[in-house]
Image (cartoon, rainbow, N blue to C red; front, side, top):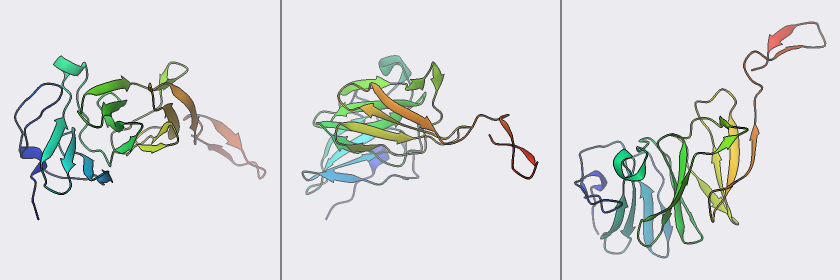
Length: 178
């Protein structure tokens, strides 16, 4: 048996750095080929050997190195095509090499030049070449899919009308549908 204090572990990617004392783990780990992958409380991602508890890598972005900051509260990563998919600051979706933790790509998905909404508090889902993301804290409640190989957006939809969209029902009642 082993115990690991995820926040206290030093950062290995993209630039080595110290651990911290952040707490509040809110992620669901995923295990692939004996390696546990999960989001850390401070906004990074870790890969841990499931048998020994040894840290394989710990990725944590910074504005100086990656060009964007981390997003703290996330609910889980997904794994596919040799990559770990997570979320980061600025509503970015990030793909990391599952063996090294090196960043493969990072994108800020948009539709017609507009953001699709907040992604800080959700988990990614990988299936059959696509990475799926649902938004939170956004007025339109979007969902979208990215191509896993390069992060290119494949489709999106909104589940709500924009605020201010007014309808009148069959009884003559007018309401804001957004």
